[in-house]
Length: 201
Image (cartoon, rainbow, N blue to C red):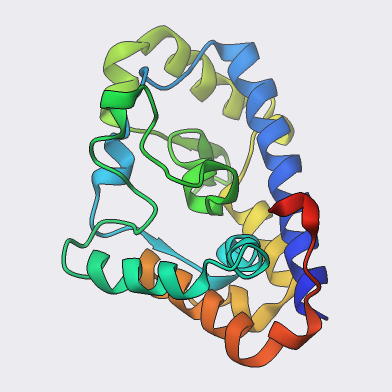
């Protein structure tokens, strides 16, 4: 599949997931603390390269690849995701410098479900959410039991990405390595196939 088509297909999966999580949060009332960003402060986040194909495509179309690769080199020293800005909250921002192009793990973190040994969806959420909105978290957990078909499963969305491009989706790497691999796949193998889109400038 052409690189630009992969980017579009991944964004369609992300749109479906965002809508899915919106429905769940509306039903349960669970939501992140304002300008929290605690999940982004982890240095052991893993992701698959395919999650950042839309980001790589956006960087290429906007002429920002070289600049971004320099940022990646610098972020390797901190261990934080290259997209994370620790001081963003001071300007009223959440912390992600390209929120629209964040990965699957970033979208599911705190709101995704995995299957337990009994095959029942089990909410995977953070300590801060458990403490700040215990009733909403309890409601979300109950949804996994009562309406398992309605909750966003990590497995389901990972499989959708796998069906788009197995090679890019199969390996989970430290997040910055996955971002770098996505950019390199674009820059060195697929760049000639992409067309600049003025609307992205």
